[in-house]
Length: 320
Image (cartoon, rainbow, N blue to C red; front, top):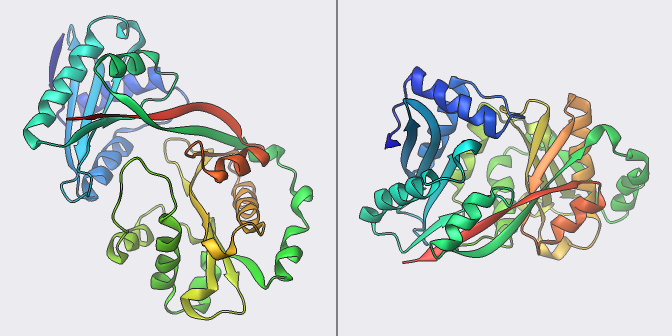
């Protein structure tokens, strides 16, 4: 096997797409989408490296690493994909050793990787190399075509008795000239409680504003909880955002869902989730896909709403 840096040519992109089709047949991937994924990782200020493994001139494995020198943890992350007929041979270990060797000159304090539980060869490889599981993130998805809206029809009236309305970001953009900063302020209060393997700096307004300028930004897909008795940024008390998944056109990805601490346990998160499901139904999407840290109450809410479990992501880490 020959391991070497990946070159972003049409020929090599096509080879990677063929590999991905074998490993993730449910996803639609084009050269343009592949390059967009690469650019997105780099646009967030990461140092990125990409490699391929070839046998007889054919791409049978791919690997990548990324880290940010600006991150408080400075952990170096890597990912690895190997064609099934090579997963039980020496190739995965060779690729992993190559990736880790490429990262060592950056002198990170730790290595990390996040396979899902179905990638048995990767889990075994990491554990043999001394990596330990730090956090587990069960994945799940719901078929919105089978969701029973009637069971939650009472929620809007119930919340209005508490002066809470569930609206979209489109509504807020039309009524609040300072919506960009006010929504960001709410987000920073919510993100503090999102479980993560490493400590993270608070998202800056400049960083967060990039979401608003992305081509996939859809303000109607942002459900926002508003306290009608408050003013300014204090009006916004919860959010649920679902995003387009270009590689899965029939699916939306549920990113952050959260409510600021003083408004929790009032069915606001449930109403936000239902609003997002109704958005998916309206736009013709079939699924909403997400993942949550296993002790996060949001996982229990998703399962109660009918999300079906999928193999979990497991975050493995090795201190150096």
